[in-house]
Image (spheres, rainbow, N blue to C red):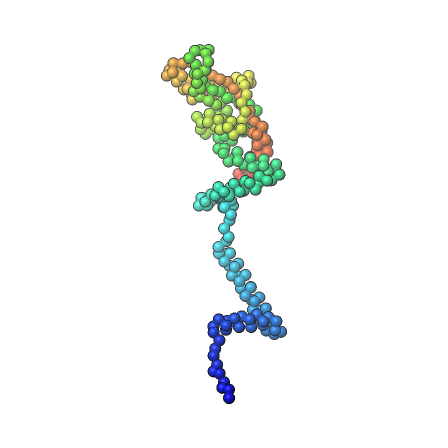
Length: 250
């Protein structure tokens, strides 16, 4: 005679497995399947709404390149490897206009307002003075050393705020390739005289005479816009003036 075996509950692991299989199979039951799909649809909507609210509270962080280009003193600069990766990607571009604008942007970021004033005058006039003051042991002998380089009267005409820094401005513009040096220009005779009367230039010449006991020598040159300087000024200056006037109205 057989005896009924006492009921023994299934272990927790087996019970959970049975529940998962039952819930999965319920998808194919006529009425239960509708409830299964409705439950999952409601769950998806709840998760989507939760994600939208979290994104609104904590927007996704920008890439290092975007973060570096955004305004804000607290924004860290992009890592160098991101900058190089961006340049490598853009290096494969075949758009010469974009390459030209990248070059203009790089140059303009290195300029200060006084240098822009100098460029504007040279662009309007077409030519400007450039002189070096050297020192020679003999009145007509060879120049042993240069005591002042890249002096110019264009700083005074441009109204630069730091007139004593005109030689540094001219050196920087030459280094960037925005200006090119030419020979003496007869049209600039009055400008050469004005430059030699400048207090800073006179001080250097007096120092050569009195302290060094040598003879000051003036090397006269001229400067014009280079091909790069002409292209940058032609392509950017008219639009920049329009933007400047628009800002001034507000």
